[in-house]
Amino acid sequence: MGLVVLGLGLTAGVCLSQDEPSPQSAPAADQQGGVSASRPSISAEELGRMLLDRPPVPVTEPQISAATATPRRNLPTDGTMVVDSRARLVPEPATGWFVLRFLPSEGASPPVPRRVLQGELLEQMEAVIAKDPDAIFWISGETTIYTQRCFLLPRKATVVDSGVVLATKGAEQPHSPQVPPDQPQTDTVSSEDIFKKLMADDPGRPLTGRSVRPDHRELQGESIAPLPGKAIIQAERTLVVDRVVRIVPERVGGWLVGRFESDNTLQEPPVRLLPCAMLTEAERLMTVGKGRFAKLKVSGEVSFYRGKGYLLLRSVMPERQMGQL
Image (cartoon, rainbow, N blue to C red; front, side, top):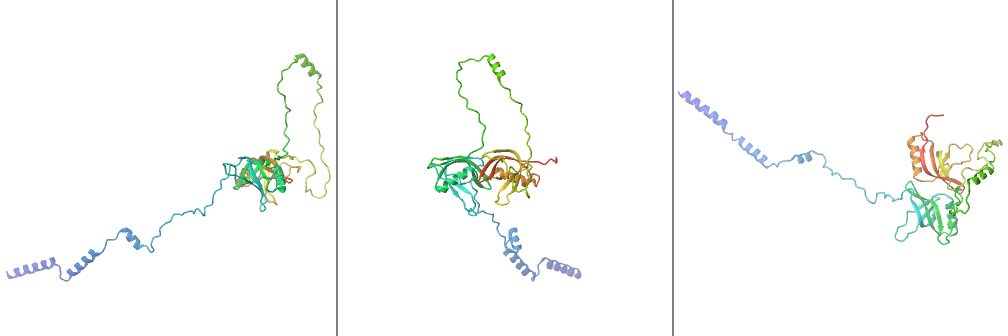
């Protein structure tokens, strides 16, 4: 009986020792509880910043300064006309061009300065400013645009002080005789009179073709210059329609020239191409074609300046090679 009581007492002591914490572990638990209670909570964003080696750099959007931005010139449209505007003709020694600087008018700002395209009218204006450098002109002409530059083909120029009108010779245009206004007829013509008049007219000779003998003159050495003869294109403002040309750079002068493809007589020398929007289109066709459009079919207006021919393009079309001989 005594042994049973002793065993129960030992069992109760073991249970009490398991339920009660040991005096050595209690302070450690209190310390852990105190540390965990005093540690602040860390968010995911703060944890990410702690893991980064360097602090994040804010992204700045690109900004274009107004001082460094290239201003776009307000150029007129290619083909617009300038009508009766006062301007002075000023030479540009660095480029060799002549520039028209327009004078302001009442209630309107002056047009953009324009370089003058080569022609007979420019030669006459040069002669005027050679005598009077401060001469003012009334100018009318056509505007062209090329490589963000403004040009003008003058059509009419009048000296303001003297009133002298400068004009080009121009091509000879067929004209019909002036017909007087209708007047009441006093005499009547019968059908018999008309028949007699027709029978009395001389029918003339039939038209026959005239044979042209080739020129067999002997040449000494290589042929350098064309044979003496009458050039096909002679007058100012002559129109060239649907001619096949090859556009090549000029050896001296920096111009682009058009060489007529079907000219075997050398009576059509190459013409310099005046700057305009159609010249830009021709350059684009030659670049995009990659050699396929070596020939172009062009139409334009011819002008002459100091003995050289110039062509203002009006239309440009690629001459496609269809593989035909």
